[in-house]
Each structure stands twice: as C-alpha cells, then as structure tokens.
Length: 171
Length: 132
Image (cartoon, rainbow over all chains, first blue to last red):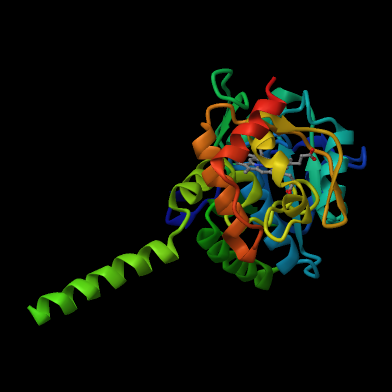
C-alpha cells in the first residue's frame, strides 16, 4: 500500500502462543529478527506435508543465519496439542530455538492468520475439516510483511528464498 | 511400398518406445492425485513424519500388504529403513482393485525401486483377506 508516496507495509500485531517445548512464544521472541510464518496442522492430508517439506528447505538453507527464525501455527489447536507439536518437530529433527511450532487460542490463531494474509476456514464438509491458503510470509524486524509465496510451489519458494536473502542483507 | 514399410516401422518403434517409457501411466496419475501430497512426487515422504516409498525396505518386504494399506490405511508404529514412524494413514476406499494394482506397480518401478510386478489376481486375493 502507498501513502503520501511512501510504501507502507502491513504490520503484524502483538501475539502470544505456546511453542512445542511448552514455552511462551510472543512477538518479543522475534525481536530484532526476520521470520517466516505459515499455518498448517499435523494431520493435514492435503497441502501441509508439501508446505512443511518446503519450510524444511528454507530451514536448511538458513540454518546458520541467526537473524532468521521460522514460525508455524497450527490451525487445529484441538488435536495439535503441545505434545503433538513437540513430536512433529522432533520427528523433523529441527532445532526448537529456530523453528517454532505454536498452538493457542483458536480465535487468536485464526485472527492472526488473516494478518499474515492467510485465509483459514473451518469447513466440516472437507475430509480434514479445514480450508486454508498455505502461504509463506516473510516478516521483517519491524513486523512488516515483506514478501510472501505459495508454500506448495517449489519454484515460488526458491524465489522467496532470494527475498529472504535480500532482507537478511539489510539487517 | 518400401517407403511405406519404413514409415510403418518408424511409427511402430515410436509407439513401442512410448509404451516402454510410460509403462505405468494410470498408476502415476493416481499416485499424484492420491498419495503425492504426503509421500511426495519423488517418493521421499516427509522427514520423520511420513515414511518414504522410494527405496523403502518396507515396500519391498510387504508386497502382500500394499493393497490393504491403500484401501484401509494403517496406524501404529512401523519401521522403514531403520526409522520409526507413527502417524496414522487414512485408507482411500474409493480406489478400485484395478487402480490399486496400477498404483502398486507404479511404486514398484518408480524412483529406481525394482520391486517386481504385482498381478491383479494377487491384489484381489490380498483385499479379500483384509476385508473389513
């Protein structure tokens, strides 16, 4: 969006969720860092495994960049307990200080999904009960959204990693 | 005449070559529609959470179970290539015996798997045994 000739980016409001180590994960967790956010659930039979696989590629490429973190929100807090998220992250073999899997109050999760340009709808007619758009969103240290891509599209994700690279050069 | 024969042989070889390189067409399409979300296009699965089908000792050693896994799903811990997996897989009841046979034979030959060929008869018998 442009205001008075100045680019204005959408901003992520403050939040507080619970991470896979039963730790509090808030906006302060990401202070001074960039992060990639997405929305998924562990029992998702459709797009999530592919999204997670692509997030894993981002994780691996930026494993040593201390200025980049990853944040995956479940949209199925009823089934995705802290224990289940812990197991899922542990199975992936990722560092819980770099890639946060969070759960929390359902309304808060769905509301913040909207702020991240992700549409999440509970739809009981679908086999898994949810519909969601599967975007990866890049947030800068000022909490502005700087880039996003379709998390299932590996070509788009490759380009997105270049956007991450560019942002990290700025920090 | 001679020209026609050459042309004929040319087309014949073209058709044969085509069949040769695409032996499991339906199986591949069904795999992409029903399995690839989880097991991935390249059969690699998802680290620790969804087991691989490419170079999977489980697939190689459990040929008689594959049809039942596809139709009825599976749950509980299993070990694939030395790694334990324990997320449940839901069955896919809408696939016919014929479609299941095609998927299995696609998997058996994809990604440098060389796990042989499963006949429709064997798929039928397996499904009869695990009928729920």
